Figure (spheres, rainbow, N blue to C red):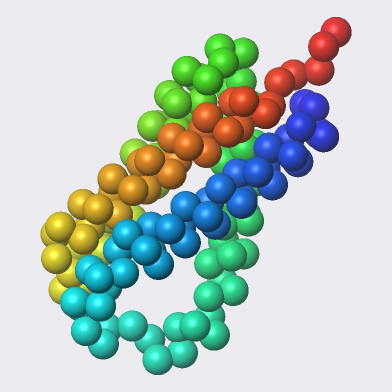
Length: 135
């Protein structure tokens, strides 16, 4: 494993996750969240650090799994990987929340779509950065 590229790709994926999440949740879905009313925890803002730690761990795991299955097939491999991991992560994330909480289905579908786009972008990033050591 090329450790330098692994760490670089992981950090790039972390920042991509953070930026994508900010755009999705603070811009694109802002009105949808406001329409839900007071369902959020009153102390939610003080707990957001947990999201950042989770994104950091997710970025390294996402990159690690990619590296272990790396086939040197370029950006298409990153897209494929993003779709697979996106489906794996977003189906439970988006649709289990719909079952458990009184959320509109349209919001959960948007979570799924935006989540898929995010994972595909991160797959492209990791495929573009990570390359094995040249022998």
